[in-house]
Length: 268
Image (cartoon, rainbow, N blue to C red):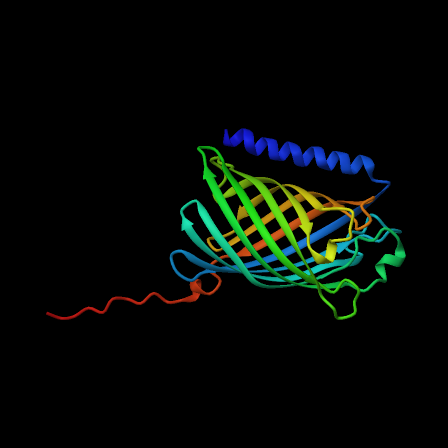
């Protein structure tokens, strides 16, 4: 029953996207590169902290081949996560700072000032482990404050995100470190004061496929492709982005350097 329910949700989202795309009058295509650095460590058995640094680059309208041509996004995002059970994790982001440029459809948009944003967020991850794969439902709620007019006035709104994620370990005799294939689909819905007058509730959708490889005990690299659809405020314009997404994760960032105290032997 649960599987049917989840499938219904995904089908609804797909139908909505198809309808939205069919009604859109203008579609813009972009090539984008995302680079992310994740720093994580353990506080105690259940509690962890995480810091995510990300920068994105995009092509210019007159040079589609160069995806490094212009800035598109920069972010600094802090998280604290708590394991409620072995399969359920509650995460809180007390602070995130973001700077975003438009996905440029014409050269004039490259000259526009970036939008600055401050964000709070809460997230729940529910992980289900099967014999050959791990399936995760991720539910997120974000409170955003954005300087949309570049006048120092930050307009608030809410955004809900849902991600369905599958991770499949790759095992072979010639593979000596952890290797896995990951796919996910994530949909974004927005509401609140800053977007109240916008004709669209749908914000964007991201479909991802990629590989993760454990370089060492504390270092992991991921590389994948994202197809992103984002609806503009007009409700009749859509940005379609081909994204190359690379992530470098450094785990146990500080604790790996801690020296384990040796027990002191006491003479009888």
